[in-house]
Image 1 (cartoon, rainbow, N blue to C red):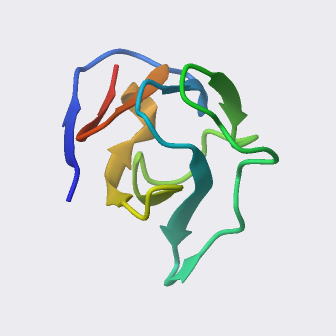
Image 2 (spheres, rainbow, N blue to C red; image 1 turned 45 degrees about the vertical axis):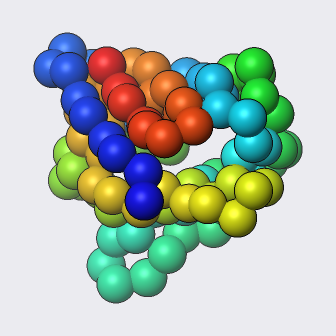
Length: 99
């Protein structure tokens, strides 16, 4: 299980940097609204040390959205993320944080 934390900031749209500071590739990034998981928002694997610019194309809906990231080492993160407060989401080996 991965730990999550957030720091309050102000964002006007759901566009953010996904920064991989872990030892594993990020293979999948999905959100769950309305009872089903979205498609994979990543159009490429995010390798350790890389940053991927994410853009949901909207700022409408609930700020807190259940999010699942799957990693090449078999681990995953599945917790709500507050996208209204996220300008950067940083993935580390045992935690995901946003600010």
